[in-house]
Length: 129
Image (cartoon, rainbow, N blue to C red; front, side, top):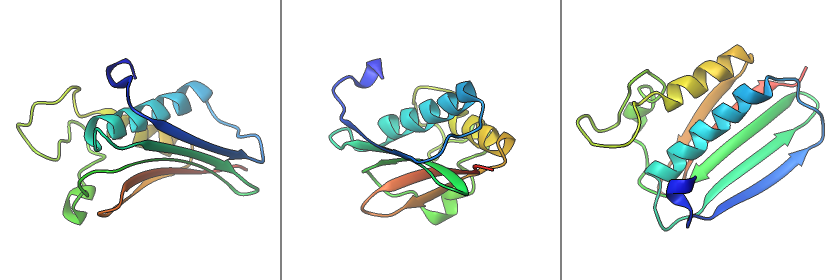
């Protein structure tokens, strides 16, 4: 976050139930999704983080404004060393979303991405039971 100190991050937490998980790894998953949103989203736009837990599911989503991700590119996002624009100079190795997806799988969950002209949202879902 130090590289994005001027960015607005909005949070919404609605945790009705405790979540049995590895908190360090879920923290890493959130950090990777948040870093991705800050790096690739509209530099003038806010980033939203939302976490909910209910009887069956825990969800954690990170959303940002910016150019939408093409449907054809979404399958590549979670592969190691993946970059949407090859040769583009960016920070990192292209491993953040891959690592996040592996953490999700290790928790019996998954990460979904929805992207359109309004926003790009990555949502981690895992069972609470």
